[in-house]
Image (cartoon, rainbow over all chains, first blue to last red):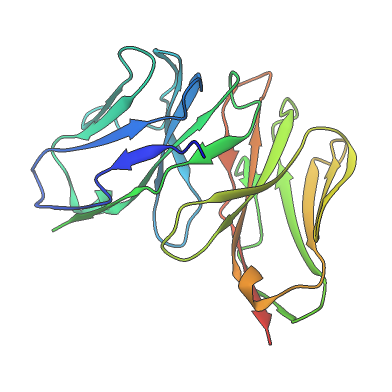
Amino acid sequence: EAEVAQSPRYKITEKSQAVAFWCDPISGHATLYWYRQILGQGPELLVQFQDESVVDDSQLPKDRFSAERLKGVDSTLKIQPAELGDSAMYLCASSHRALGGTEAFFGQGTRLTVV
Amino acid sequence: QKEVEQNSGPLSVPEGAIASLNCTYSDRGSQSFFWYRQYSGKSPELIMFIYSNGDKEDGRFTAQLNKASQYVSLLIRDSQPSDSATYLCAAGGSSNTGKLIFGQGTTLQVKP
């Protein structure tokens, strides 16, 4: 069964350090999402790609966060420098059709702890 | 106003009862609606989606959509302790924004 792959599963980093997360969507899925989920809250959309283009990054803290999907397949989310408040689960999801119109499937997530 | 709103709960029901989970959304351009189940420490798992007004049934789950009222619900019949989880409502496919937006989730507790 096709799955969204994410790595690493867990990451502990010191504040002010750089950290990166990787996501490989289900093959053929054009739309890719990065979400941040703080404990006890719903997933918050950070960035949405359609193929290699950013559709929405209005909630991405661009002074420290960056995201890319250079060839329209896998994607990397980077934080530099990390802050204590960035501790959260970072979730990647993908869907087949454009712009959130079809079911999105999640990877297992990356649990980030900033110390 | 949040774009997708849910009562955070917890909603507690006895085993075998019907659990009713509700969600409202603000973007009238939203065209597709999803229910995800999330166990503690795990990622969300898609359980239902609905695009048209009315009811959609899948096993013990029924999703209901009322676009005029901007209201989505999920009914779980014959609730089991294994249904205890957080249920996330999401709205997507908006003609206005195209984003897939989640509510804060409702925690369901099914007591044996």
